[in-house]
Length: 197
Image (cartoon, rainbow, N blue to C red):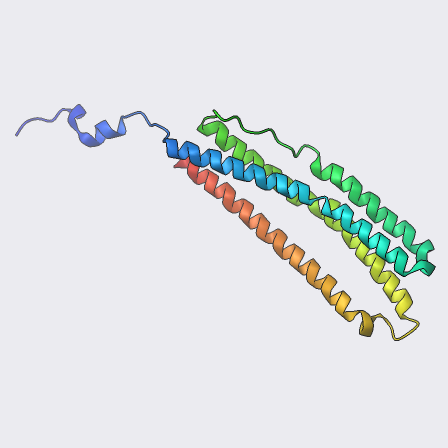
């Protein structure tokens, strides 16, 4: 039986080889970076729905309740200005640069992590700057309905379907927000697995 030299052990030879980043991993990272960047851009463009919804509720409320205009105008105006200011604060610092095509693995992972952090920041800001103004406009509309409804039979029997829709929308909004937070956590875990693997 011959003596084996330490360099002859296949396991040690295999472990001493320099690690190479596979082309598949780089393609996967670039694909993930493009996908995350597109999601962030779509989310930012979707934020324009807040001011649009506030403006539509403003127009509907004022046209349907002209006698209450003196009370509704200021509340709807605050909701509209708040939502327009929200567009600025939601978009501030959120538009990222596009990852260079020849970026390596580490810069690709950093880009992906940065995109996820942008979406997390957006998720934190959206309650104050997008949901809040729309909720104020809806509350103003419900107030107008309550004030008009007290003359006839009241808000509850006639306005119950509308109130149920508003409650379902609010519940659905927070369920979707929680799901999005879980998705962001899962994406960060996937990046950690790619970085460690």
